[in-house]
Length: 405
Ligand code: ADP
Image (cartoon, rainbow, N blue to C red; front, side, top):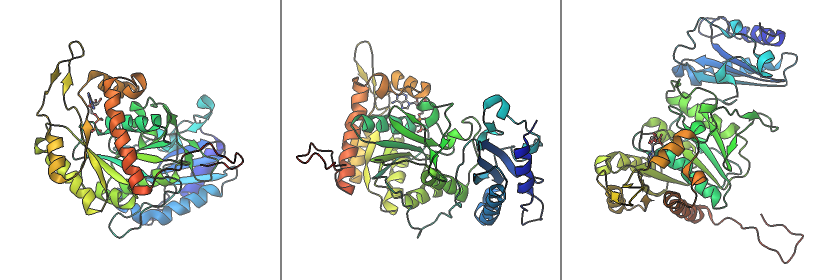
């Protein structure tokens, strides 16, 4: 059963035609999801990634069409890369059940449960101005030359450490191919809410850190196929449409690798500094070197290298085993003239914490492993201050009526 409002929205959307053949976008099964939350409506339109940048007019027309429907106050329409199988599914949103009765919201289709954004997908490439991030004081990207080295785990634990050190911290999951931060932060079922600020979404928080991830809109198990411009557009939308408020630092968990997408992210986002996570067995750290070079190419300061899964310390006897070749990152950092920030051991507690949504910084803040993260976080905080100037600390004032921020 569908609601009358939903039917009216679908009819309005079908008046918007795909310029290729003049067919209504509902008839073409391009409308992948409609989320009706009170008077706020979010629509997800699936498009071929190659066509993404050329469909901004269509997106705006769709937004106007939904806005014109009686009972709609805010309409947000996002273009998204076709999900595997989803756009070809014979089940159009028109035939999906209206879930308002069961959930209180009208979550017709999971990916549209919150807007990924309202702005055009940007064309990546050089020469573009970095985004204006408003009240975000600094952006630190956590990158790696390849996947599986513990980049996301490191990003989470560093973000929590920075927050424990008194900074206001946001965490952005830019790993749009494998968004794992909702799980790692224990927010699998969380959903961003519409913010009071028009066109913005409020990020969920956990452990004192604000988090935004494409994983809030799509299943972790059902990866989205993002290519080039669409991926970049999704990231920009996540960044700009999130009501981050004032942040001392936004930690960005980058997609693994050093391809075009990573490069354009490093160009479009005003990055204060980058940290590269590597494992010792990452032979001669070739991948990590590529990561360094990428940031150098776009003049992003390198805060340093972190060696993850560096050694194994027996929890019973304390014996330290260098399971893999050890010290490679330190050596590479010296050779490359960048700081070596520290090593994180291979440890079951770190893995379980990450996989169960209870980061070790939270469950064992005074333990040696948390201290290792905290030590790296302190160096990052100092590096941020060096780049953007020290944060004005609240002081006990002689003039109590003046507040310092
Ligand atoms: P990436 O973001 O580089 O793909 P993840 O952070 O997702 O990597 O980590 C990959 C796997 O390795 C996860 O299961 C995670 O729990 C585990 N892991 C990461 N760092 C450590 C560590 N220091 N000790 C033990 N397991 C770790």
